[in-house]
Length: 363
Image (cartoon, rainbow, N blue to C red):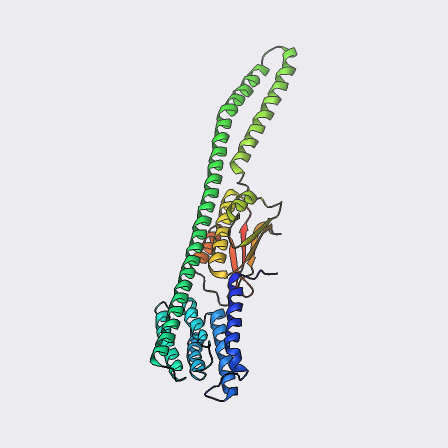
């Protein structure tokens, strides 16, 4: 079951506050300047458009919600804390509208509040104090929301940079180990291979000399030398071909990513080459980065397995909001290009969460 995030709890709390400040008027305890049923419909429409704007980020719905908020307050001027609704519409601008829209909504909301208070027969001082109070509340909450958004954006960028650095460190370490294996393979081949070849030649010459008693031992030593030379060549070939451990490398990349539960499963029989391993590391890095920045997900599951046609298949899926109409950015295009470069293919699906299915040659 998906964990409920603090933002969701905050949204539920705001909804309850809106219902609370509108309840007296909904129940007929406060007078309205239009038929009660019409005002009730207006209030419900305000909550519906605000909720739709918050969930989907629809600016048209947000604009409608702002206007409905004004009408709701102006048609029930004696409803106490009802102008709190306008505070919430002002805060919502930080998440939906352009930066300049927030101050504009705050200013217009303040004018509406002043007009609503004046409709109750209040004095100029009372009108001024009420308008100033709500102006300060709106300004403070709007600035706080902008600060929170900025902090969240910086945190995502920090996580992305950290992930890139960790992936680069893993690839650098794997590359260093690969170079070390290659160096050892060369030295092993140069030192032992040369000597064993010389030993084999010497034994070959000795075999053609007289002395039947020594011939058996010479032939036995010749077989040992040839077997040892073959083993050295096999070992050198393995040192050159062995790829970095994929499970260890990916575990290092995805470990301790804040705010995202990542699970990676790799079948035991998956043995990709070094080039495929490096590509899979970069692909997983891009998948995690995309999930953090765009998916609004809490968990990500990645599986890597062999297929029947001697290929490696990577499947990842998150529990985020998805996107039925995908518009790949630079990150996803780079992911596809990496896979295409080694002869693989990739499919992206945003209908239920976000799913990536990549297939690459095992060798």
